[in-house]
Image (cartoon, rainbow over all chains, first blue to last red; front, side, top):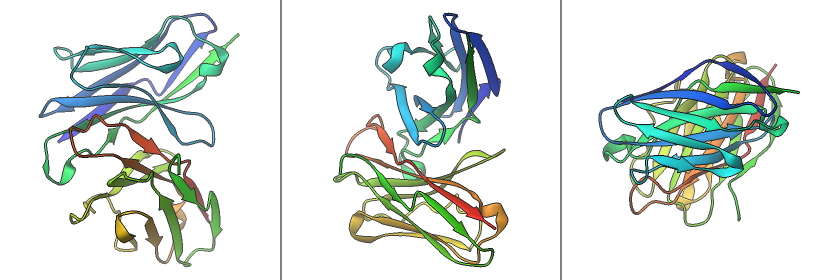
Length: 117
Length: 116
């Protein structure tokens, strides 16, 4: 079984400030981890993914995330927020464990990021 | 096509009516997933198709929900006797397989279903 917890349903930052969105996962097997962004009335867009290679993963739009096995975390960061970053962000986990759950994504509840001037 | 296509983009239906939602995945993607996104429930897994294997239906909320995938390509999600609690955005995703799950999932823009 696998699960994802995103700490904070709403995060508000000033433009130019650090963005930190928290994600903790639970998985009985080595996980694959993803961050998605969703803009209003749009589908999900992949920001970045961890696939057991480098633990620090760089994604699009200046975002990055670090996989920390000891902390079961995969927090998303961006050094300087832009107004265009305002959206909802989802952390997700999947496994390569085989069986009927093979490749199924389990999502966190989402974090709405607000960027104010 | 270049992306996952879902239709219709918006659907308003009367309570008790049946609806069909369509997903056209990326060509060559053997895995197809349906998710439901509703207020307060986040993104819920509904059903998963992988090639010719039996689908994983473990997320379907009731027997009013069913889905099929014809020819390993287009999928249709059917909701019978719709209820107001079925109002949500239904998202489809597809993925290329044949190796580890690190191949990217591509999501469609969703169908916004409103039951009145």
